[in-house]
Image (cartoon, rainbow, N blue to C red; front, side, top):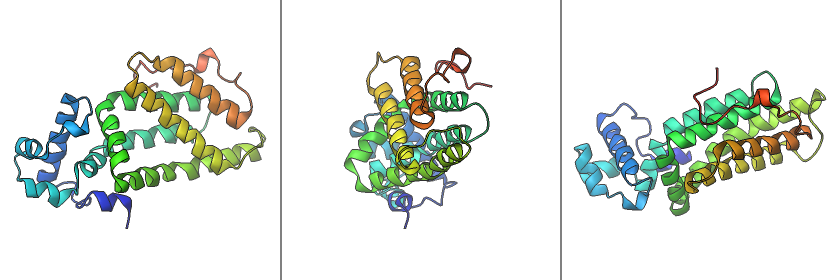
Length: 222
């Protein structure tokens, strides 16, 4: 059984109007509370959604589970950003573009990301979901590192899967810092993380030059 099915009891019922209403109400309440999941009341949530309290638990075992379901859109944006990293082209451009997209997703869904961090800390099932989702990114990134090494473009070093795991951890730390530290500079931090990715995979940072710099404050690069 997947972690997602453990948390979202009706994960296959995405078109269900009651489930959709609950997730919409949750999103609105999290925006109002700046992502504070503890401040969300199930009774208020179901009243806003126009459903009964038992209906909430028909779909979700807890508020943490509901947040995990509500974060699907953000997860989709992260998947899209990662596909850029795994594509063709200059490595510095791919890495910087991917990180900029991740930061924008974190900014646009700040309330959900903050609530997801809360949920991860309180729910074993959500922690399992978080890890399962991250493992889906480890294998393709590790394969990319292996291919770059085989082509002579990347430096030899630690096992590719271990590097991929730790680099993804670094991405999470970047998003957490930008979520909770209001005066953090997203562009400077994103550039720093990009430099670490390049140094870790390619053994050099001089690949990060002005032409590959993509500010996180703008829209999605063309």
